[in-house]
Length: 631
Image (cartoon, rainbow, N blue to C red):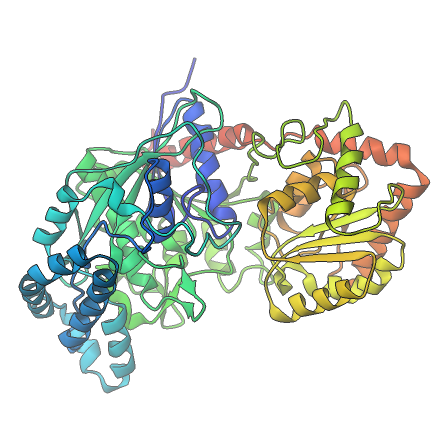
């Protein structure tokens, strides 16, 4: 007997193809497609970042304006949410945002001017409605710096009349930004496929209650994630549009660091997703949130939705990387719309600060991670990033499920980026891919030489420092090495310098999607010496392409690579351990090519597709529903 269809809401801070900085976006784009293919009603809510709106414009097949910048929503007034925080600071922020839009479009400036009086009225009203708790905090001399920060990072409250007029009056064409503007932080902006889903704005503004009795008014765009398989179910995506909060070049920050108002930005996302359920009369069985950016959602449901149909929704919080927890000054609590009664050790409080991920861990029905091994590691002192005790408190509610890969994109039998296609049954094309990669990177075309690849952020978390220490040993083995990535300056400079003086080592600083595919296809071995790795994707891609991974046995790397069967593993976090393991793999490549080929075939036949992961998530969802509702 088939199981009943589930209504599933994803609340995410990034999602392929709209916006991406890392693996979270890949999961948020692929898992909903796999769940929809299994027959479930899946919806996704995310912010309408500048880069996401450019994608919507291209998805609609519209020309882009050369001036750049979104013209869809006039800049809303920004008001302070805390008593004692000067309203003039909020008004200045609104005026600055309006000026930017005026430079992009004269009509937008006229609209902003027309609404100026209403904005001043909204600012004054919001200041009068500031909470008593925030007033007390601002009156405390010790809290003066925090009060100033709160004034800067306070949630944006738009004039409802202006928001409603904008939501009904703007056209899709007004979304477009410059075709030459800054690309997505990894790999550039994604082009829509020929199969188009025309985005459209819903004909109303969404009021999001937040702060001291105020509301943030957002536009809502609706589109769908385009599945690779023609005719496959396409999950609906809603993008919350608020130019002051989201219309920026970066997603979480820019070259100057993280944005100072990130608490407000993601509180609006989290509360707005629930308000959208009310507006659409969509009552999910499961709300699946990801990392700290949407970790407030389970808390909002438990505290604010107990009288609505959302009270029955089970929540799953997936931790993609425990190192990012959403720490904020406690004086910013009023920005969330929550009371000080939630500031305690079993909720938001951690070391006298706000910790959003901690609140999510305590309030979610189930906590999941992106690999079983990582679920164990984060409950230890060494891997818990200060939250190991919190996670141990949840006990059996912490469950690990491996990420999948999109095998319609990462498939050597159909990959358009590589020189020749191949499969586990016929590996001859892989030799052609190796030769093509050697030519592309300016290496000697030597089929007998082991070719090693690495695609990574060049950061100590990825073990780049121990690779640097092992370089002399590895290159002395008569191998070739190709590195693709960017990150810490010392690593970029060191690898570039070494590659410039070696005929066996090449580096491409930056991200290049096509080259990433060609490295996976052309290399014989792939290096991943990570300090920790919640799941990892490149070791999955590598096995799919018959490129045997050399990994440190942590997190998802340990879960997915079988030592001397589908790859090679080492335990100690040292250059010597990495160098010795590479030496063993190179020895096997030369001394026993038949067994090396057997390992390649085994690796290629492993199933890491999202359909398998989706079945595990479906079982997890039903467990969460049972725990939430008792049915």
